[in-house]
Image (cartoon, rainbow, N blue to C red):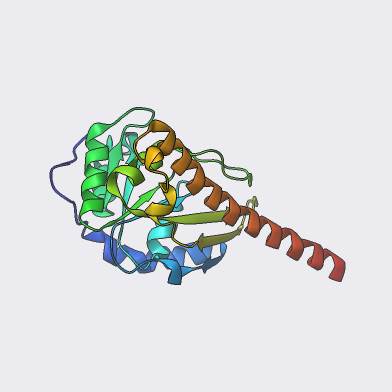
Length: 225
């Protein structure tokens, strides 16, 4: 695996690929994006989203008004071609299910520089149109150590074989002070878990709201037939 954690990568492909990714997302899905105005224009930010498909990072890159750096599982960087593409899309490798100190230090460096960091708190893809699952502690740890605010984000996708309906929602920012309002929580492992749960609950609420709207529309369509 070839990745230089010592310097912040600035992928040349990122800017050029956004328009094609946006067009492709509209070609593959019956697609809409909500809440772009909720994305802060500057300052360190963690964008936390549920994970339903391999294409999720591309969807967020295509629609987020800010440049986003991403954690990606290290296996994807074993292939030289894939590694080159991911590096140029500002992704960096992380070893899942372990305390990958190099990746964590790189993520904290990005946030220290005022960048936007994309992360999938569940740590895995959850397919099949089911609601998001519990978050791992990593996102709470990053929020605590970096002091960054968190933007909850939701991908709601219907489970169809062709032209699935997909909604990408950017929620409202969770201030870091809200995550760690108690001094005791700020300095404990329990605080990390509490923060992770707060973030994931916001993501779940976004998802459940879209589920409710979808079911309502489905009933209306059935009644009008």
